[in-house]
Amino acid sequence: MVSNHASDFDPVLLSCCVRRPVAYMAKEELFRVPVLKQAITAYGAYPVKRGSGDRSAMKAAIASIESGWATGLFLDGTRTADGRIQDPKLGAAWIAAKTQSPLLPVSLWGTEQIFQKGSAVPRPVPITVRIGELILPPESSDRTHLEAVTQRCAEAINALHDLGR
Image (cartoon, rainbow, N blue to C red; front, side, top):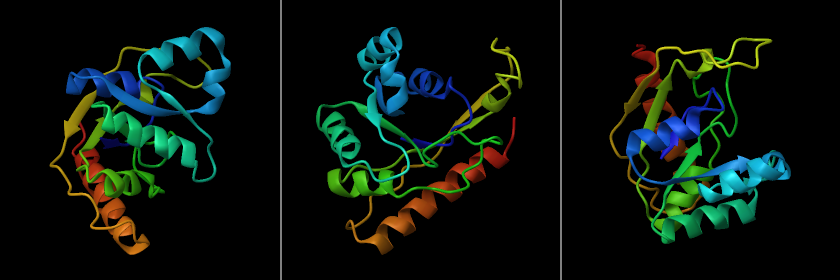
């Protein structure tokens, strides 16, 4: 499952929408917080070093797929202020190529409004989740194929997001 990402609540919301456990890459800093580490690990999260292609995180994603988990990846690799895909990374397409798993584009609309600047308290806001059509995995892990599938995923997610509420 590939999605946009604008809120800390996105992984939970996506998992609820697909009604099955979803394993996510989570920034390694979260695994340094003792209680949080146990909680997110129990829900299938695995650490990723941001800023470069983290091979151990990629292997963990492949292992979760091979174990029968759905695997969720945020295409930009981080949250964006407006919820749109702006700088998609190739990791999801690479994992899909290695496992020959289709990609399911999902758009979360409105989650960027859950937290207001300067407030630590989440607000109830209207949220819309749209699930797109499956996208076949790349034919190979050749960069050209990865880029084409990644761009298709980004376009599908942004098109769903542009529908608004």
